[in-house]
Image 1 (cartoon, helix red, strand yellow):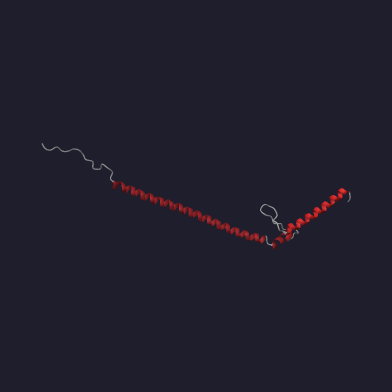
Image 2 (cartoon, one colour; image 1 turned 30 degrees about the vertical axis):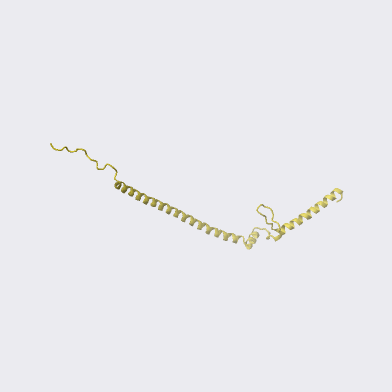
Length: 142
């Protein structure tokens, strides 16, 4: 008889071949990088559109502000104020320097103003007159 044949089947692919595993991983990596860059580009373009819309709104508001500022300045010019006062029947003049009182942030008058000096003089005269009348009232004289 002849030699006995080895009937055992040899497994040629017993392990994972690294080359067959690398190609799909490389393909997945390239596709994910492309998708990531595409999503980033879409988001940036959306943000750019929103920024352009906000800038257009800002320009429109600035133009409206400048128009309103011009209107306000023309309405509050001395000539137009006098005209409007006369139209409403008010006999008013612009305040003199002694009538203007400047206040600080706390609401107290600032020192060194002409109007405050005049007010202090007026109060001193009124208290002197008031104190003289009290003395006369105690003594019984009028």
